[in-house]
Length: 377
Image 1 (cartoon, rainbow, N blue to C red):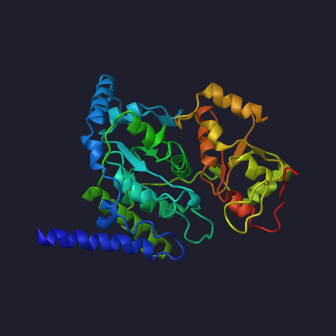
Image 2 (cartoon, rainbow, N blue to C red):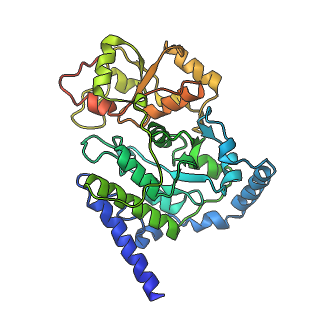
Image 3 (cartoon, one colour):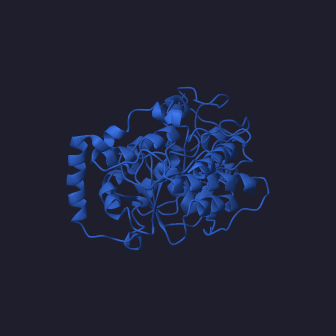
């Protein structure tokens, strides 16, 4: 018993150290298994012992259980989302992996890893958008190298044959970024949970309030793997093979070329006020406004009141109202490359599966003194 506890203690220390060693990156995992912190959160045990929630869970489980069971291999890749009912029915499929990719804007003052500790979908692993990023860039959560992504995903126990469902704590927000990341690296068997964790809980489905030993091991291995890659060191066996899809990611040069070439319709997912330059950007040192020739469709217009993706006919109207032709190519951007992926998700539902995202987005564009900027005035 003592040796087991000691082993776990050492593992947690390595887990925390691996992220704190990263220069200039958030030490988001440092308190992952800080029990004092964990017990200071709301009493998550009430989730399991709430009679009303148990009744809702039983009823929802009965409905879902009556449905046919499907492997992820039979799931269409044309629609980028799955329902909570589907996930609940298929949660124990051996070829299905679930990721909690919650991430929040700095001014929201929400800590995704603390929220993961309190409640997550059973068996889900935490995917750190800030951690799984390009360590050579000063921009936030830029796409990592192929080698780094392969190392992280392999450490998480995900293989190319697996289907992956990703969700977040807002409904449908940062999960779309991870959906896009997997697709950039050639893995199309990836779906977003429609409505995310809030909808899952509204339907009465169970959540876990502690991380398993397996989750600890995999998260530790993943954080160590990306550190080693960017330090030029060898990593463990790579079981996930990437195939980079360059047409799905744009850099600043591509956006500059598009201003004159106009090969793609540029759609910005930020709020209209930010797009117009009527309000300051949330990050210091970033000019206000938008890329010349771009149009604004705030990402929230892709979602209904339950934060689920709108039906295809309503999505089509949103784009057409802003003069976006679905017959022509589209590129999306936002503030830091997160909500642009929600636009790409909506366009995927409409049959446009080759929509690139400008990874650096406005944080990169607005920080350059020599890039052109338009405003509403």
